Image 1 (cartoon, one colour):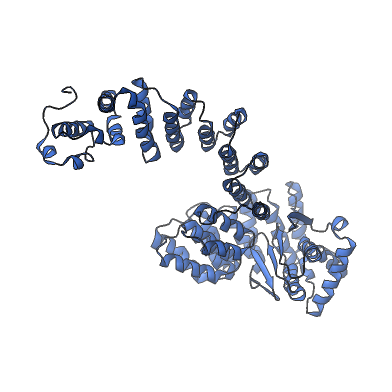
Image 2 (image 1 turned 90 degrees about the vertical axis):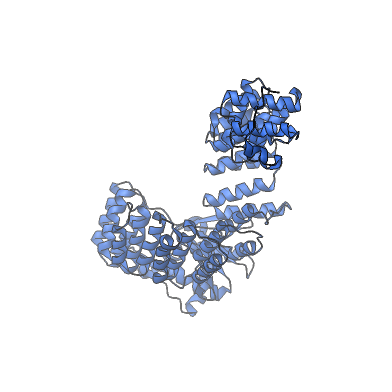
Length: 580
């Protein structure tokens, strides 16, 4: 005993109570003082906090040997592995994963045999540290921890190794499958994730949620909603009191045009994070409800929730979609002044979009010039979009010069410039742009629209009359067109930048993909059903006007998600108030 105890204890230690001393030592020296005090006061040594003993003694082999001998003395040799496991567990699950790893190697030096629990705790520490090398070593000592090591491989981006181990496992539980789905989604491999999802013998809520979240992240919100409906059909419902699941559902709903469903989930949450608020603000902005987005922000700040960079992206987009230039300027200034948030390039892009849409093109150009980072394609593209709306050829040419260097194969920029020239009837310049596109191998992306009916996605390409314009659809369109013209609809043939007769231009307009999708929806859904259409490009002026009047004639709500935002057509009015 004398070898382990100090012959004297400091006066301050002696004067303190054993209870206070138990939590006061921060070094091996102080631990020995506590040990001596406990012996002197005849207090039980078993009251020593094991994780703290392990932490302060792991720095050197000599100190650790002292700790090991102390625990052996107190609890007996047979109990040391479970005791050290409790230390490892506390360190690995707390904020000390590095100390857990150090403790493990000290134990190996003393020939303390690890068991399954030992390895599982150490692997947890490796996972927190993303320490793949040590994770492989631990896995070699215990081959019954495949789920943990598969997760570690995924976290470290070693999906090839994760798949090899997964494929070699004789048995896989739902945790194994969920791990592969989750990491495939994080790597953007949605097809492989779906393959695991289809093959797994049983699914948990987490399985469904991971796939739904992945589809939303990959820009497939319609498929996400379809999968969500399938989940509901199995009788399984997500626990909307789970904050992570609720946030995923909000994100899914707002990106699918189901704003009221998103609001229902938000209102039912017991605890809301900054992601919850930011997702709703972004969703409201995307749906043209800028004022309500700002109201949500005021509510959020009122309860003490601090905004982050994502919140301000939503706020700036809300201002941009509704032309609230002054308020947008204020938000941009508030980021740094009031919240210490350094604006990133997404925020600069939003401000350029805000100014350009509102016609402040010169201010937008100066704003770009004064940016602290190099402008990217999103920034110059926002300026180009404003130039198209306000017919500014000079700035458009400057923007396209930068865009052709940043993203030379993006057809959208060339098409916008060509349309600007066509609006100004500068046909030689139109021909020059098209010639340049051919020379650079740039092909125009065809416009397409999709609509989901009874779980099946139907996709229509502009002008593809051979397959889409079956007799029933053609008749339905002609009937609808006649009623729309009685309400004042006049086809806007100026958007057809081709040399053809007016009647041919009208026929060309009728084959725009969103109109085809609308007619398909009118035929194959019940009266009164909301029609939801996804479009890959910006909706044109003619289709926008046609859909407003169609919503009156058919007494239906029509929701169109184009490249920029959602449009809710209802009773002859669009939620964007014709500002898009």
